Image (cartoon, rainbow, N blue to C red):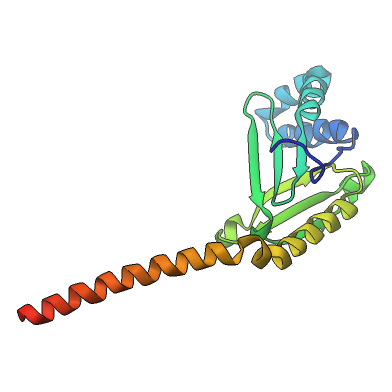
Length: 180
């Protein structure tokens, strides 16, 4: 999605870097095998990784979709059409609050219950305002949908269906005349 006048680019809080270092480091330290890895992680690898991860974080809200990109070695990019967004949940726990962060979880249509929150954005500056902007864009898109489709496109589809039904009716009449 190319940036234009209707595209809004979210900004991420730099405090996500120490949050990620601590979160991943403590997760590693919870296992016996992960303790040596956690030591290496806290000695500098984690800061290097978090800096590069932060530099590649990207989130854009366009007129019809939201696009999120993250990753260093493996890049993940997700695009969700606004009309598929069922809800955007704002999460702010005690650890996130300590780092002045929050998470937005997106629930989309067309996924099973286990995949309902298939995209999470942590660290967006002023996440409540960004959530409100997403929900307003979704509602505007839903209200403008009939205008966007246009009567000409609907008429063309209906004429195509009518022509196909006429062909089917003609074939059925011929079958009845032959006694099939």
